[in-house]
Length: 263
Ligand SMILES: C[S@@+](CC[C@H](N)C(=O)[O-])C[C@H]1O[C@@H](n2cnc3c(N)ncnc32)[C@H](O)[C@@H]1O
Image (cartoon, rainbow, N blue to C red):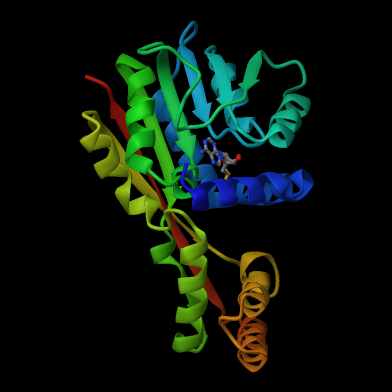
């Protein structure tokens, strides 16, 4: 991991697990995310006796979904707090959550039948090396699905384009790999895998999202980071709030999913 990567990992680890779980639950409830999770499960179609792995398993629900189809399901998650939360939530389900990182998966070569990884590549410094590592553990004929956001598709309206541009540039810089979504297909193809499907889903924020969640917080974060002024932050929040009051707020973000098979 690079110095920037280890700093980021340490900061993520320090984050309150309850807060992380809350944000992941909110994301999991969005129709676009539900659509892609269901698509991934259909593409992977694990059968009884197969080994199915979710890399960066968070609170673990996707591991439980793999187990419900009969697979030996394993979540790989570096955060001890999220692993503990996943174990608590799985209560009784036949699943495992193991410590590990996508860069060095704790599995032998060609030992995994099915692998999924969702919204993880945007956090890694070398996504090509990570997809190579996923390919290493996949058996010939094994299936893989990657899902990720592409922050280049984020649209927020109405907002001053210059202020918005400075805020978005700051958030891009904070993210190891903000354009991950558009890269998924190429990463899998370059690793020698056969692409078997691809899809996308756009998350459209409801009107009350102008004042809460990511949009409601972003001007405060950007202000704290010094990339916008107090006056710009106030105008940003007021403009979006007033737009939402008349039903004219728009925020959208597209996520992508690609499936592939190892020849
Ligand atoms: C946005 S969350 C997505 C969680 C889960 N995949 C989901 O769909 O709800 C990203 C997850 O990736 C994990 N993560 C971050 N860096 C990782 C790495 N290098 N290897 C494996 N997991 C990582 C985080 O701890 C977190 O659980």
